[in-house]
Image (cartoon, rainbow, N blue to C red; front, side):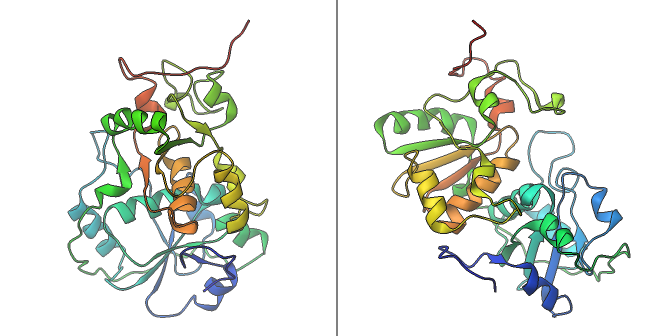
Length: 290
């Protein structure tokens, strides 16, 4: 379904494939952007919009909607069991990767990413529309969560022993300044800041963007294997990835688990906004103003 570069799983489609399958029954395009208004300025014909926060998050608690509510969401979008769901979005598929991880965690099958995301589709001058996509509601079957894909705070804390022993790995996919503790949030994201800067002890700094090319597509399997293997993040280890709220680490989770086929990779949903504010949680900081 795409020009493969020796990836472990067939989880990508390219823009040519999407363009050729805009009207193929059973192929459902889903756009997921950080900026939810982007969809309304122009989207791939037939694509539906998902609001990563409004649709996936519990309205009050810091957690997700239930598996039954995910089924209801897919039903409202007109998606049927067995449909091929193709996700894409802005920021080199940050949020599409987040949706891919969350839906996988929720038990949804038949997921793929459009390689390069929205930026590649737009850069190639491909067809867009501002017309609303009409859908016919369906009854999507019940789903079962796959907890092996998600890491919780206490599991991460226990994981530190595995990291010390060399059987586990932690991947911090944030920027080097966030990792070092120089800054406590990304520029323009003060609402996602924390009380303490730094990183989880033993974590390796592998910023998410190092896995992508300039056009937003993923690097080859050989390049990705060298990138992560060079930092000691190898497929024999139990791996946990994190960032600040799990969107960037979803991108890296996708690379490790889906593209490289690592068998044990979890995404720490709480990430640094939880860890950096947690009482009594250990932190390493390498930045010093002196």
